[in-house]
Length: 324
Image (cartoon, rainbow, N blue to C red):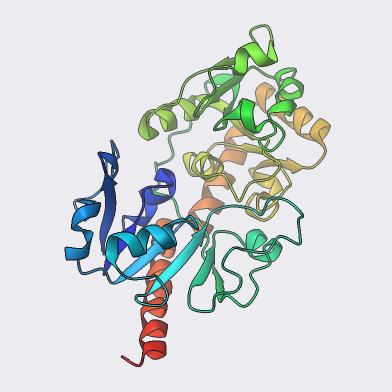
């Protein structure tokens, strides 16, 4: 298939574009496209002015404004004029659990939730829905755990603060030094002032980030309200033990044997201390984390499910339009 998709979530697309399709990424005034991502040749940057010349089979929408953007660049409205699905990356915000999805009144576009938690908490109305769990390009069992520190990956940790659990980091810093990675974390050290117990290590390219994470003794996932952080699943693939708040989908994704999971921060801090003191236990728990991640969040299963979802979108459109 020829799939139109905007470069909105690079980490997610790392996995999606490994499928056996042609992925068309819009470029507008030099913005968009693949950027610096090391993606297969089947990922094609297309100037928005040339998109009407492309034979687009299906559109993967990720932002509500892309309905209008797609109509503008293709001359066709997704759902009405060509097959489309809406990939919902996010947990609902606002009056949870009463938040109505923007496509709740549409029956012609399937909403693809990335976690069962999201599907449960969004009010998707009459829109058809499905759950397509994350898949990860396996970085390999790189874990060494040589540095007795906690790795944490948080994008915009100061702006998002309680959502990302940034306010919880001082409690964990009492158990172990914290090495933080991610987008816009430059102000983190000054804001928390943890006297050398926390340092920001940059927003690293994926392969470099994986190597750096794997050197730390354990991975910390303090996020209160997120679909399911890809960095958490990547850490598990690396063979890292993980310490996670038992919130949203993490409660389903992380077994206790893979590290520790709880809504009691004191329990997680105590577990962090144990892992710092016992590298062998950390390694054993990390092995469990990798086994679980490969089984549930493997790439092959993910791509197979996407093939099913895309084919169903095309078939349903043809049935509605009488072109089946």
